[in-house]
Length: 136
Image (tube, rainbow, N blue to C red; front, side, top):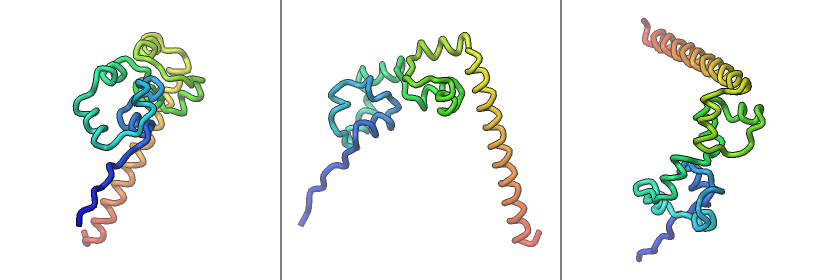
């Protein structure tokens, strides 16, 4: 006795996040209908023109905007950037960075350096513990 399984469906927002696109910029058909995992896989493997264009020119969701600017999502909030940005807007910020962007990039770099330092120290501690456990 075989039961047909229903395909697993996801909300358009979830699918947009997985595709790295800004949902309000997607076509209405995409925004208003649940997406199956197989449809998502098909969009990834054979992106339609609208998806290719969105990935190239935007507008981009906040996490991608932050990554392209080299800052955190929180940095965008502190700077008052609440809207999605296009590739041209991001390029303009990078070409002539405002003071807030310079400050946020420095802050983000310092935070990442500290995270790397802590990770290295933790790895060293684990290696030392492993050596001690083995009797070295």
